Amino acid sequence: MPISVNKAVRTAESRSLWMSERNAIKDAAFEAYVALFKAGLVNDNLLPLLGYDAATNELRASPLETRASIMIVEEQLK
Image 1 (cartoon, rainbow, N blue to C red):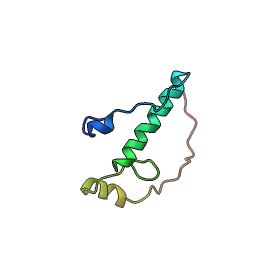
Image 2: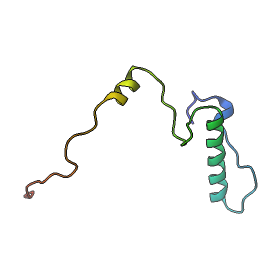
Image 3: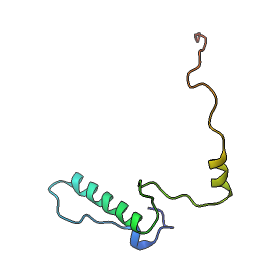
């Protein structure tokens, strides 16, 4: 995690012993998210909280994309 996050939240360990490293990594990642949630750095959907500054407000206020998602194009020649 970034160095700007409190040191107590930056490190996470698995709560129990696992037979595979893969499951231990999953458990440690879950514990990291729990620590971030308790620290108030993620919301109920485990998404990072955005600060309220001019740049964030501008992004939230920008209109949705109005162009078509699929465009008809001419065949590309080699």
